[in-house]
Image (cartoon, rainbow, N blue to C red; front, side, top):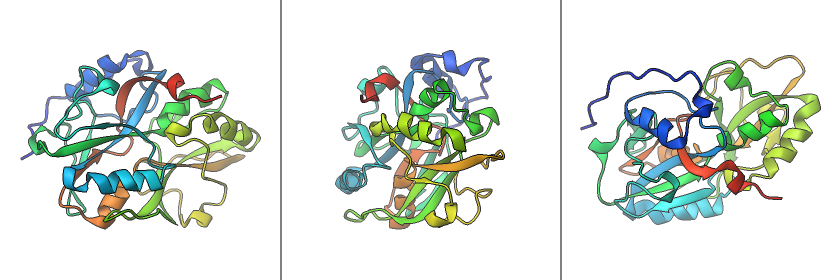
Length: 272
């Protein structure tokens, strides 16, 4: 059974100024919020947690699809902490999780201790929230931060390369960018390959099989100002889309947009 949910916790006035340790402590206490803009200067990450019997398929899937699934770290079976979250706990330190049984999401708890097993292997996967501070420093506004909502994410018609039992579509996140700044957005994000890197598509969403930008599959829609172009980055929710399609008996991820804030500096993933 899922753990009892903790009481509500007040949102801090300036989440960008919080250290990863302080941010994780708030999530452990029960605060539920998307994490875009939190703990400026520190990398955020997706989670995908599976039994050891399925771990090789996930690892191979990530290796074959490095753009949406850039692995930052892997915890051994049963491990709940590591160098990316010193003193932390992957069972409690994410604002909200998604629990899947046979490919169906059955719960969105703030604590997965009640689901934990000693054979569970945790994959920590790069997240595009990591390069948002660099975009902002480059003068590019982030619509979902400005509008106070979760980033919009979409399943596409692009198929990932399968691996063992894992197969599914590419998932993308979308940020509208002024036409005059698209080249800057590509240049800035291309220097962060460990957190998805440069966009996978710019412009017409129908070319990705996305029919309606106002109806994301995950997250929230954002208003697209006049003169802005939708820009799409590969998204670390891709493994969860593969879980939904491939239907393993058990898998656990972060709730989309509710990330693990790591102790790694953004700059550690910056390449020249």
